[in-house]
Image 1 (cartoon, rainbow, N blue to C red):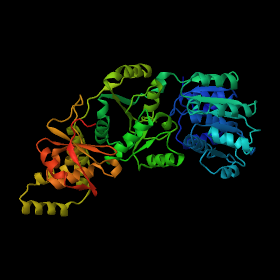
Image 2 (image 1 turned 120 degrees about the vertical axis):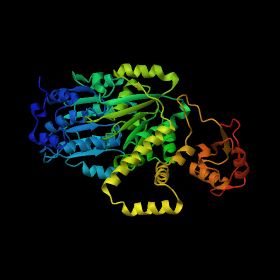
Image 3 (image 1 turned 90 degrees about the vertical axis):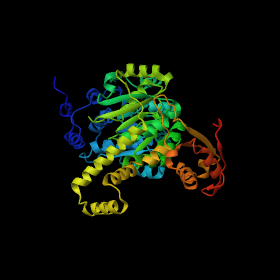
Image 4 (image 1 turned 30 degrees about the horizontal axis):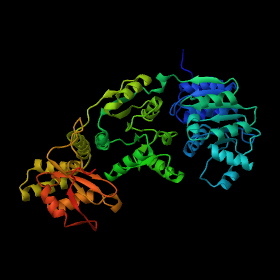
Length: 527
């Protein structure tokens, strides 16, 4: 049987033009099942995850059945978050690019309601969050007498966020003679209750589990101790050097901690979770989309509705508690036929969870060995050599070669020594060795190191580089003799070679760091 095409669905030519301009070639599984049923006027329940094309699955029928000559609301789409409402509205606008007279408007909290009231005039398709839709209904500024279609997008997330009462109130007040489409990644009992109470003989369309897992995503896990997660995450980021990556954590607190740690180490990272207000959320997402931030540390609920292509890697910093969330997470990468990579951190007591996830998702999650610092430096060297190769082939290096010859003559260095020194500088060998602990596969730290306690921390605006610079500058010891620097709010720990620990203690108790008097002593079990 031939693959179903959009032309086979009897769509308006203007919609087909919009779809082809957007790069749609043929319907995805959820679209192929949902669009024909919706065009027949049937109520639908569609189970599909983000990234399967469900926006078009309801957006295309909405556009097909909207009359551009009627300047009243004919379709109302509810979404859990402001950002998802904006994304859905934009996608429907793109599909309607060649349809004259169609007006789509997102409405959400945090925006001036008086501006929204003015913008609602003449709108046929409204995409909104439940709270703001309720506001407009109470004010009678959202008139729904001509409503033909009601869509609930990410219904399970709306319930998780406490919108059940709002949703039911809206469903009770919209015209009874309407078509209702409900889309959800999961189907808990409250969703089925809404289906039973507010839909009529709804057709259930479910994308089977094997379709939920993207086949072209490589999936690996690392067995590591909890205390080493942040360090290993940094090593993997250095080795893979992703353009865009998402790091999933199970709690808001952990998302903040991981993002802060990455920023302190010089990575372009930011956190996304439910405690952010809308302005903060917009700033984070704009930075991620624009590439100013290339690492997004997110919780599951906050990440729902994020539709960003070209994500290279998804990290499961914490294994999700729900098997379906694993599928949702890794589905952020490997989109539109591209390859993707999913890396999970697993403790010794979590292997049963990993087996459950693999069985549920019908996928093989393979073991990988934790990369060593040598692996990190080798990866950095490869990247440097790629840039060098391009520079040697494309650019005139004559004047630089003359400078190298001059240095070699005056300093009696060989060209190989000079090249090696430049390479060490380029990959940050000293910085890597002194700021990062040597963790083997079992999590053991480098031997021959002494752990010291310092009575200053993050709240004094002190960074690891400040401590490192002070020790090297005052004691004149090599940076290679300094190991991990762990920062906390009011104090810090630094590891130094046991051979020089006594000297560090003697010298550093007489100095200041960023104007702050410090006290340094052996850690002796301090935590």
